[in-house]
Structures are given as C-alpha cells and as structure tokens.
Length: 249
Ligand code: 13P
Image (cartoon, rainbow, N blue to C red):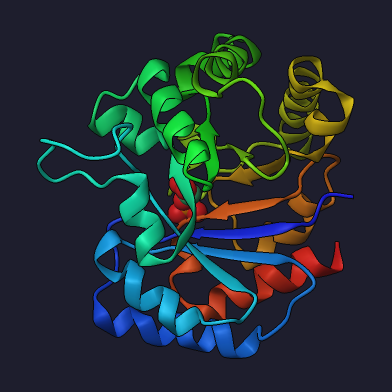
C-alpha cells in the first residue's frame, strides 16, 4: 500500500552548519522502512543532496516558480531544483500563501510545472482558526484541494499535506478526531477526482506541531501516511524519534 513519508520543512532555517544534522540523519538511515524527505533552504539544496547521497533521505525544494525560465528575479524554476538534486517540492505552504499572497491558481500552476518536470508536488492545505471555529474547515480544505491540485495526479506525482494554520509552530494540535475527519474527507475527494487506484495511492501528511511526544498518536489515525514537520525536523535527534514512530505505525 502507501509507503509512509516523514518530511521535514526547514523553512528559512539553516546555513552550512545545518548540513551536519542532515549527515547524521542520512547516516542513521542508510535504508529505512519509510521514505524520508528534507526540504532545506534553497541555498543548501545542492550540498544537502550530496550529503544525503544514496541514503533513504531525499531532498526537496520549499517552493518553485511556475515558469521554466525567464525574468523572475529571486525565483527558482523546477529544472533548477531538479538540477540541485531535488526530487520533490513543497507548494502552497500557508506561509507562502500568507507572506506572498499565493492563491490556489498560483499554487496550481506551480504544481503543474513541478509534476511536468518529474518532481513530486507536496501541496499544502489548511484552515485558519477563524475558519475552524466558524465550522468552515471542510469547505475551505475542499476548495483548496480543488483549486490548487492539478488534474491527473497519482501517488507518484502528488502528496497532500494537511496543515491547520493555527497548529503551525504553536504547539497546538487538532484532536485526533479532527485530524481523522479531514484526512478521511481528503481521501474521499482524491478518490472521487483521480479514481480508486490513484486516489488511494496519494499520501496524506499531517503537519503542525508534530513532535516526538505526539507523533505515535497522530500516526495511528486512519489515512495519516506521515507528517510534514517544521521545528522538530531541524535536529536529527528530534526528527529520529518521529521517523521511528512512523516506522512502527
Ligand atoms: P511546525 O512543525 O514547526 O509546527 O511546522 C509545521 C509546518 O509548517 C511544516 O511545513
């Protein structure tokens, strides 16, 4: 069935010294029962890919432009990410949606570009606290899924990460029931849209304050195929128990 995925999003953290954490992670996971992905800042991507080598750790980008080249100062194309060693790219993270005003159409165009280049698109979705409290969570998530995920996706081309905005970096985590409700909803929508085989093969990650202490409980929830981890992915010693919990789940 679906291979589990422990993904780390380093966000805007890490200079050369952080490669030691990746080295430790790669050495501890020459092979692994789950897939492991680290998305470092773009400045480290190439060296990170070299450090990860042929271990079970792969590396990915945190964003890309939808165009393949051109006059887009400061942006990176999917070919550049691939050339640096990326196999995946995180798209539509709430921090990009908020900080850079990225709407679903922009995320969709980026995901299309990434998939066309052979990268796996890790598309992030999630509601705000206001939306959660107003009972709009599934409507918001459904609209984001429809609007920012391309047609024709498979388990190879797409990973979906459910990241409630209010749980990111806050130490607050939804109840296991709330996580289960969203993941079951997402699975249903994916199967509806991509068919039984492809919709069932897409991995669904939970993200938002995943820590060694809560990982096992979260991974026991149906249709949680792994996690997208921020803060606790920066240190190999913190990420290792999360990987172990996923392997045991
Ligand atoms: P934290 O794990 O730091 O809450 O971040 C989650 C996240 O945004 C991963 O993309």
